[in-house]
Image 1: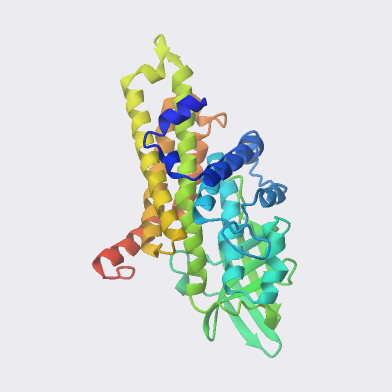
Image 2: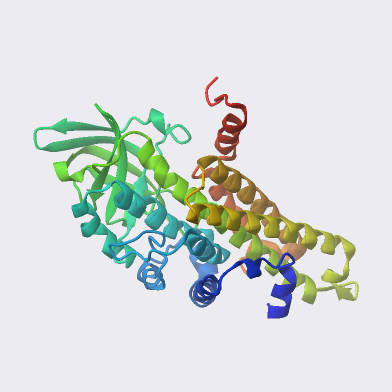
Length: 391
């Protein structure tokens, strides 16, 4: 797409709200996406393949644990992180999901709640993409209600014994370390479980209609023996995993707009070149209405993401604000992707074009890190003061 067309789509001049450093970082990640993701994503998606070798490239790009300081982490701002994942998800949600699981979930858990020894052991090589982490919270019968988890860690004289099961755990089958949340006598605690630990089984969930260029697994823990050093000393109760989930949810607010923008741009380019009844599709009123409706939501959603990023960088971002952003932007991104597909006609169901792939992926994004219903109830409790999660 030409620069002039892209600039014409920034009707609100949102780029003018970004600093030179932010724009430069965005362009660097956009170039990476153009060179490494776009030429390969159709095959990765078709083959249900996650390219493990891209991890060190993303580490070199500086997007793993991007918002964290020290221990080899990039230490960039919340807005810079948001811009980066927006560009990566314009390539594919599965690649952005890897960055989120690695940085916002696994690395954040270690950085925020781990011991100094745990941070030194894991974070530098995870930031470099040399080691991969995963975040095991969701269970087969405890998705939206993690307080009901049944995975249990029993303390022994020489450490812990872990039993239970987790589901939809991203990257588990290739992870070098698992951050596992389990009930104990003292409530929910976090544990670090290195790859190869006896009694751990991770099985990729197949076949999938969504997130095909990513990995999600069922994981079982059968009398897994862990040393006393495995526990994350700072994490106690649901505050531990929720603090990580909020980091991931924040990234989704931006990422979803990347998928939406890429869908819109694919439809806009197609409409400008596809002739029907002797003129481009873009010259018809119904097509223009679709394009305008898409653009309005993308501009609004991107402005919302930027506002939340500025709040986060100022230390003022609240969980209910993240819920509003996640609820709105993913919901609207799915609508944009679906509408973009209609402009492509029959060609839109092929992997030559991105909108239907984005729409399929966004169905997963809509579900994980809190469903629409969960974020609606979070906002409902905030505005009424009444919790309605039960009964």
